[in-house]
Length: 193
Image (cartoon, rainbow, N blue to C red; front, side, top):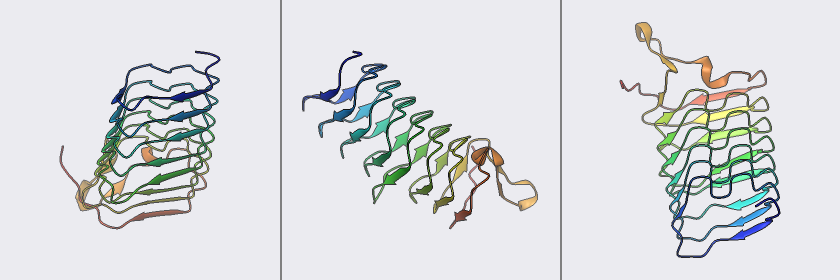
């Protein structure tokens, strides 16, 4: 699909399956119908010209590497209906500057390296519904200046150190963030896995 530039997916489709549009390097715009519930593994991986995508309010999950290496996406809005963002989902989206999480969010999990190497990303405000943020979730986001989360339950996969009742957030979450200015935690509760 090297010359495919735009996709209009019919309204009866509920799942974008594994590798459906992988390597469609000329793809610029996608219109997803409100019937889509899941975007699976590598669905739009390496669609390097993809600049515009609107995720529908029916979407529940974003699969592993679903949008990895989509180097032209500048902003993404995660619908309130999404409950999980899988590992490497937006890995190396190097032009991604802005992530907006709609409220009230049902998002529970952001897995390992989900937004790693998004070198243009400035701010991240994690919804209060999130209780799992995986290791290296924002690794290599060298432009990240503000990171906020406000959560009743929060667990960093291999990223919480609770020795002697002193809770620290592991450096693994912020590898390479020499410009990080603000890190805010409203409520933090450690959960044993």
